[in-house]
Amino acid sequence: MSVTVRAPAKINVQLSVGPVRDDGYHELVTVFQAVSLHDVITARAGDGVSLTMEGEGSESLPIDDTNLAVRAATLLAQYAEVEPNVALHIEKSIPIAGGMAGGSADAAGTLVACDALWQTGLTRDELADLGAQLGSDVPFALFGGNAIGRGRGEQIMPVLGRGQFHWVFAFADEGLSTPAVYRQCDALRGDAPVPEPYVSDLLLQALRAGDPELLADVLHNDLQPAAISLRPSLRTLLEAGVEYGALAGLVSGSGPTCAFLVRDDEHALDVAVALTATGNCRTVKRGTGPAPGARVV
Image 1 (cartoon, rainbow, N blue to C red):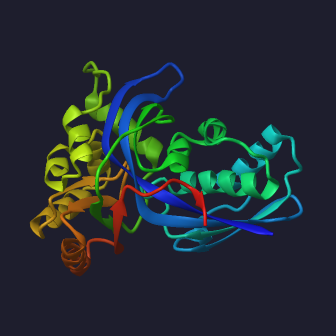
Image 2: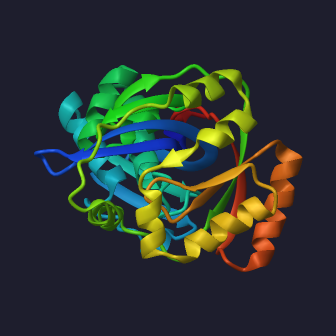
Image 3: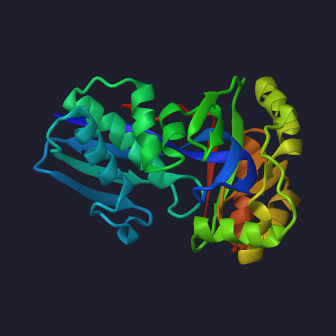
């Protein structure tokens, strides 16, 4: 028997970064959207927990117990009091170190796959509680759609939306370290008081309306200045995307992937071709959102 799960990438259509908390994390309020770039996780009966991977950048990732997918399987086995016997295989399409939570998607997909393989019968909320122990973005990868994330981003509240949004993703040659981007964000802010994070009412209205023009006006990422200061070429890429007709562009999460909002699929193809021709990015992909969370296929 084997179980196959598709788990989505995410973008932050809004990321509001508040003060540093006592535990060292920043207080966040973010609006997530799951998008149609997926990693595929397959779980089969095995001896202990093992992992193999294929796809873009997979050769650079660990396959031992430092990998989030391995940790997810081990954690679920402990919680459900079952033997941790599973052979995992991941086909990666989500870029690594790209600000789109590929590792978190793999962990979420592993929780869903192992839950089905081992027939542990856990609810999605129980899996999300386990996922929050693994990483801040894991619970959202389980739920998908549009959602507000609070705390470290792990406290999820679904958000109503209408229609489908079309995106073009431009991937850089090298990743950016999330901790380094947060440190740079703090450095750029200096000693100025940091306001509490918030959700934009206009952004939620744009999602409810399914209107890309409205959403384009309110996309925002507090980490974008920090990512650009560490990787100045991102500014050039963002400017190029808008110059070639995108409604708006922003750095996805901690970067360095840039996400460009467009009107429709035809418009996405035009922008993708133009961005590819610049030579400023490793590859360009198109996608839509919102997408479902990690699901058995």
